[in-house]
Length: 276
Image 1 (cartoon, rainbow, N blue to C red):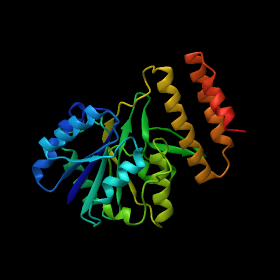
Image 2 (image 1 turned 120 degrees about the horizontal axis):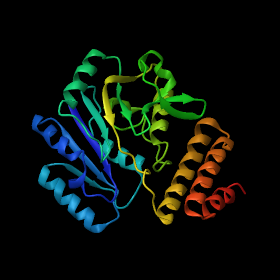
Image 3 (image 1 turned 180 degrees about the vertical axis):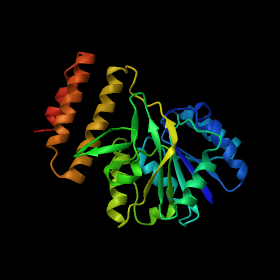
């Protein structure tokens, strides 16, 4: 088996990323390729990241600015062979992996040859966020259960997802999205494109992820982030569910929370302006 491990970076030094310490060991097998896709906008960071990848024999792709997650994923995937023996693992810059990470994947893949996408259990500070349970239009944290018995009721995030490269002969990441809903859109796209259920949950592999948004950000940072979320959520809901009434309700609730936090009405005005 040949593995390609893709990590998208934004304005962060690759040398400081948690995932790097584990990825260096993967190159020792000779058949693996580590790919960093850089969405950074800081010239100094771009220069240092490029040199760091050169030093460590990592593949480096400069996206010439922040192009969003889907374009970064698609750019990296476009250069990877599409055959049954090739697997693509999506990592986040703060992913923490164990030393037997690839060995475990190989065992599970060989034991389930009919599956094409393997997903770990991903936990955050709240609980199990992936697989996330699909409840109508909502994607909520799951309880610890045998996910594979009713896997059609769950969606998945990209973190440490292992995908057979042949999947990308038929599907791709939707570049109309920028950052949010990318994972759930990919799950729905795969299920629409293929007649059989291709996802499999690796119940014994648990990844702990530290996601952004826990600490308080500046008004400017939160407003830009909210704009991205609003655009992505509206597009995702419109694409898969038609009506955007539900997304508007979600955005109003988040806008109110941010307005109270920052004591500014700009978040609420953003939502109301787009209803006109």
